[in-house]
Length: 230
Length: 407
Ligand SMILES: Nc1ncnc2c1ncn2[C@@H]1O[C@H](COP(=O)(O)OP(=O)(O)O)[C@@H](O)[C@H]1O
Ligand SMILES: [Mg+2]
Image (cartoon, rainbow over all chains, first blue to last red; front, side, top):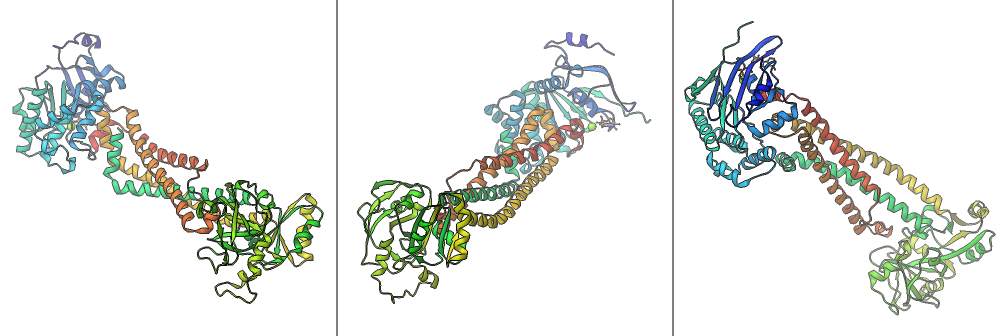
């Protein structure tokens, strides 16, 4: 059990980007996620590795403020996410976190460019066309900028999804199972691209996966154990 | 977010177009009904102002009213000129104005009458003077505008009153325009007024056995000959006359008396039943359109639950999500309402342009009725409600759950 006040005191640019203190979560009286104390330092891309059901998504949802942990606290960029009211959580998430979903979740009715513009509008309140063009160029999609998501190949869709997560210049990029549905080549390319774009924009990656193939790519790993059968 | 709404609408273009069309059709039918019935009733009232009773030949009372008050049907026949004096002598009759019909000029009816007739309908001269001598004519505002006739212009009447081609011309007896009336918004705008004996003059020269082949029997009989008039418009001075006279005339003479108010309300009641049925149908159509928009948005939002959750997670507020969905419904509804208004007025305009009788009744596509605002408001309200119900449903769902489950 940690005191949220000690966490707020560590609100400095050099402090950890994500900090968990005595963090665990119970569902129906069963502990579904137990991480305890853990820190993610800026720039130290981390992999959250564990079998299915080990609580990775639960942890991600707590980090992004969609779920309130039953024990402990989590802070993001120096603010105690788990202690904030919903509207403030939305604000903190909007300002500091970019998300890459396993099923991409690009808006099918909008072009790649407009998907990025919408994300920018929602997160920053304005649209920077030059930055969007630059980002699309960086992920190698310039020739597909006007295409709709359903016209993209799987690889192109991933690039677009990464571009959208990073166009808001978040300090933290969270990805839940970004490679689980991909073949080896695509999985490797996805991780390459995420490292590349994150380093270029100064973002730190937090990737949750059960996919052992990408484990060697991360120096910073947090292993979760399979839940004990009840 | 409006841009997103438009993108979603464009993305399911066919569905969007169908919903807009459905709503537009319902709005258009309601607008057409509203304009048609209000303009018609309004016109009926104005044309019949001051006319308490019409006396003419036996026949259909409605036909008598339509032909002599509204100038749309052919007359029932003629009555002797003495009828006018007879009526004037009756107690309680304030005014009796003869009408002699039968000829027309470029489909505008020539009416033999007295200066009291334009006075009754509140028409005043724009220029020139009232007809006084034989063959002098005063023309209504529409006649002046459409024929371009100036003061001093001579013209010959054609035999017959049906629209389109005039019958044989009475070349030997030209009329001369001595005055032009100001627009009144009544039937008089479309009439050419002259003295009763001018009409006789035209036909007095004509040989009695000169039959016109293209003339129907009724039309021939209706044609005002010497010392006959087609109908007499009567204004009562006392309510007693209104009670006594029509019945007396119909029972005791071989004339017919008809009361415009009675015939018009009978006609409107008859038409009204039909209009009510169409109106009910149009309201049903609007509800159907609303339901269709509701279903379209509901299914679209079900497919988009994941999108919505994602938008929430990347920074869209609840209000923004509701606003986005609501704007989708409102955009559909506004497009439907705008198209419906355009369509409604367009149909009225086309009907007025292509059907002479409707134009004669003063159907006007450019006139707006306050009730139209209500129709538009109803359409927008339906669109908004159809959008808000599914929007609120989306907001109730748990974002983390939706993100985990929705594909
Ligand atoms: N909405 C939920 N209701 C009940 N149990 C849940 C729910 N979400 C996750 N769990 C349980 O929590 C545990 C951890 O799930 P999760 O965090 O999704 O694991 P992972 O992402 O590592 O596969 C699992 O045992 C799962 O059954
Ligand atoms: Mg998971």
